[in-house]
Image (tube, rainbow, N blue to C red):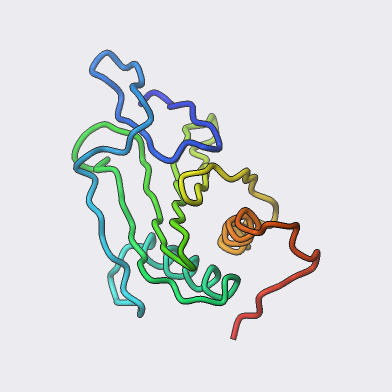
Length: 159
């Protein structure tokens, strides 16, 4: 598989053409979209748990419930295309799309992330520890919607 170069504002990927050259940045048109249930179910994909946790953090930061939570995945099991998926969440009137894609490296793979809010790219760099990745994604999203810089040290509490 040929790596696809993406910027922080890219929200979608494309499968390589038969010649191996990468096309435009588009998630496959037949990429299935699945609604994420409010409660976890045995056997559901891990992407649903990530989307649900991200929706919880966004709901707390925006102080509004998430109206829609969806996951879209490239069909990489059926044909050669990048391993990529999006978490699509509607909260407080904002359309949030977090895109994750795997990039091959010498030591294995690295997952990259890009965020868009209402179609605008949001700068995002994963900070260590990556154990707090979902919180980092939610905070970057929330800060992108604030007209002024939010107070430093603001934290959402998990109950």
